[in-house]
Length: 222
Image (cartoon, rainbow, N blue to C red; front, side, top):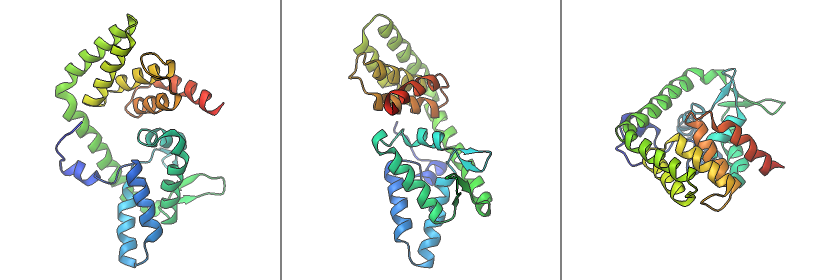
């Protein structure tokens, strides 16, 4: 959804966990040579660490990270981009890779990362606030889609659900699209697309999508 950039969202611009930004960050890390250049890359990369989901407030939650990345990175590229992200950050010692394969946040940078987490959270709240005015319209569109779905008019249902995600990134719209792509109703069946939509729903708070995510992963990994 197009919206004016405020000071908070402007700070996050180009520093979010999206495909183009991750590869750019990784390339910057690999090519940085001068001391000042390395400092700039470090400051840039702190924003990436500040958006990573953590376990025990220390270790990177890989499954949750995959969920976030898969909202912009295709499933068949997911492992590569996770590697670019985590290894790039470990190269700068923002993350420390342990012998068991886990990535731990370097406590030396905890204060800086905590600040970025607050900025990232504020940015998310800002997006939600920006879409609040049109939410009644979005929910009506979703209800219409549900009626179409229940009556077997799947193509119209898919169109309604797609409108809700385009208008306001509505989590239940993502969930319903995930279900339709999983079932192949109204759209061409695609487990990869279904997983991406399910994860879009999950990272926006739709816990209902957890079971669907597991079912889709069983098909993809089995």
